[in-house]
Length: 213
Image (cartoon, rainbow, N blue to C red; front, side):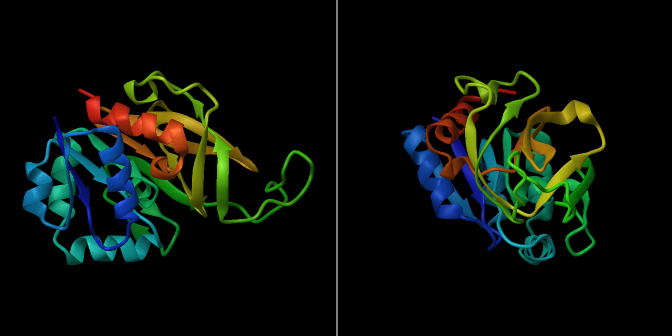
């Protein structure tokens, strides 16, 4: 059974992610770690995150994890979650900070103007918090067994805006359409929280643990 490292840079909902993976991948070795050597030794890597982008980037570097994250993202099945998706991009408007640059594009805040309205005309709050439909934009092994339009759980005020539309794996509508997931080679990254998304989220994590990119 596969081994997976969940990267601990002090900013993620790590235990929930670990418990969810342990649930779907009985027998897998699941390690929550801030040790770059353990990240590089694992067969699979999960890069979660919560909080503000400037804090996340600072803590990643303070723990010396940047080289290990970059190497894992080049060479292993790699799953980014929430801020762990946003950090893969060039730049974030949150704090005007550079990301890791593995995907071309920017991280943008939801607008505060009249576009942020629900179908019934009501105003939508930011952060976007709660369940929303995810529409698959490309076939991918991580969508196996997950019906298009399944609902996943979101908590965020910012979203990724890829320069290359070909990497968009899913979209969601919240006032405006935004990118819910991206995929490129051995990387799959999502803005939602699969560990909090009931059966659809567990299926995605199970698919990740058997994925052979």
